[in-house]
Amino acid sequence: MQLSGKSFLITGATGGIGRELCRMLNEAGVKLLLSSSRSADLEQLNMSLGNHHNWVCADLSTHEGRQEIVATCEQLGGIDGIVNLAGTLDFNLFAAHSAAQVENLLTTNFMAPMLLSHALLPMLASRSEAVLFNVGSIFGSIGHPGFVAYCASKAGIKAFSEALSRELADTSIRVCYIAPRATSTAMNSDRVNALNAVLGNKSDSPQFVAQEIINQLLSSQRVRYLGWPEKLFVRVNAILPGLVHKSLVKNLQIIKKFATEGESL
Image (spheres, rainbow, N blue to C red):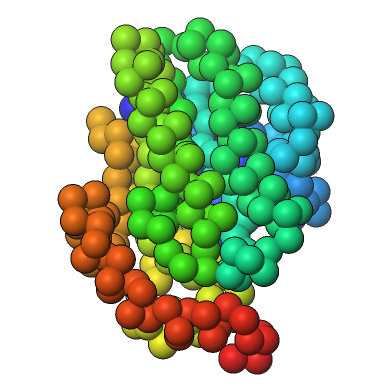
């Protein structure tokens, strides 16, 4: 897809990856509709991009918030693409999560982008070329202790992207899915960062992930996994899940320690 002159909705625009992606799309000549639930951050981001884009402050997890986003897209004359980037992370043992925390993770990371995409499909279908881009996670393919609800939500996005891509294969809409590994953003708590350091897990920069999204938008690639050896683990887990199970369970006590102890770790 040629980006210049296109119009894109970016959810989670004020996050670490979102800001970098918006900056790169702005430089590529894309007209942006910035979306998040923080109005002050949206205004600041728009100013940093030259103050010539539109933004909508809405809670994506609510029906009303999604309706507001769709209405804004319609008022602007439609969009050529959406990047579903908004998400949340809560590192804890599943038994320690409250029902509300589990519901929030599944709603924000899975149901909300799925329902927003559903509402925007007619608008995208009206374009001669359109893209529906879902940002998932390596954890959508590898179940990891301490991130049970998060893994479930991202696995849902992965399956949604795969099925919808096949269903829309004879239309003008290209469905894309990218699965980053750990990324250095504020979404990670001190405990998550400490756990990654102890386990030797590498983290990518938001700039790197944003550039990979750009590269995928420019290419014909529908699915992309980021990070080595994480990309290898995805393949191994699909074929020989027992090997990955043993590898992760080997570190279970370390993971439980960081999940149950305080932020001072």
